[in-house]
Length: 400
Image (tube, rainbow, N blue to C red; front, side, top):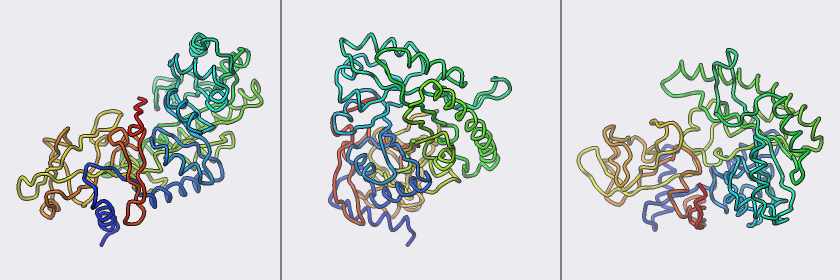
C-alpha cells in the first residue's frame, strides 16, 4: 500500500461516522510541518499568518510550540477579535480603512497594546486620526517595504503591487513622519517577497519555466537582501528602538532567515501545505488540510460524480487555482466541466471502485481559503477524529 493509499484508509476510517462534505486537518502532518518551518527558520521566531489557518484552535496549537510567536492578521476587525480572544501580539499585514475598528483600537488600552497596524502612506495616518472618536491610545505602526524586483530602469517589474515604498530613502522619510506625529509609535518593518516565497520553482512538465523562475528568484533574493538591510539601517537611524523586521513566507523561510537584518519570519500556508506548494525545490511538506466530497452518481464506466467541489482559490484564474482530486489516486476532472458549483464529474479507472456514498478527498489550491467553505475542521490523529474545531466561519466571522 502506498503512503497516499494508507492515508486514504486512515481518513475513511476516522470519518466513517461523518457525512461528507467535510474538511479535516491531519494533526500529525500539521505538527510535522510546523516542526519543519521551525527548522528552516534557524532560530528566528515565526509569526503565523492567520489568513492561511483561519481557525483559532489551530492558531493556539501552533503558537504553543517553541519557535512560533505572534500572529500576522489580514483585516483590522479580525485583529481586534483575536486580541480580545487573548492573542497579545497581532500584526495587521495590510492597510485598513475600517474607521469603526480604528475608533475601537484608539479607545482601548488592551487592544492598542496588542495590535500593530500597517501603513505605507501618510494618508493612512490621517484616516486613523480622523477615526479616533476621542480615543487617545498610542497606535502601534509598521511600515511595509515594496519587495518587487525592478529591472531595466524600472521598465520591468517582478513581484506583487503592494507598497509604494521601494527605496531606503522613501521608507526613512515615512518613518520620520510617523516618529514626529503624536499618537503613533513606529515599531516594525514588514517586507513580504511573494515572488520568491509564493511562486513554485519546479512546475511539473515545464522545465524551462521552472529554470527561469529559479534564476529570477536567485536574482531577487540578492537584490532584496541588500536593499532590505539598507532600509533597516535607514529606519533605525530614525527609530532606534524598532521592535521587529518581518520578512519571508513559507516558500522562502530559510533564505529570509539567513538575512541578519530580519528578526522574524512570516509563514502560515506551510502548516496546511495546499497543492500550490507541490512545486517547490526548497522544501517538501505533508498535506495536512483536505476536504471530502461524497459520490452521488455513477454515470458510466470510469466516471463518478461527487457533490459540489467548485472551490477555486484567489489569484490569476487558471488550472493551478482549482482544488485537485487527491484520494483515491488517479482521478481527474472532465475538461469540459471541471469542478462544479453543485456537482463534479471525475474520470479515471479508480472511479469504478467507488460506490455511492464513498468519499473522494481533495486538496485546496491555497491554504486558509478552504475554511471559508466549512464551519468546522475535524482534527484527525492516527485513524480517529479526536476533536472538532470551528473555523472563523463557524464562529460567525467572514472577515473578507
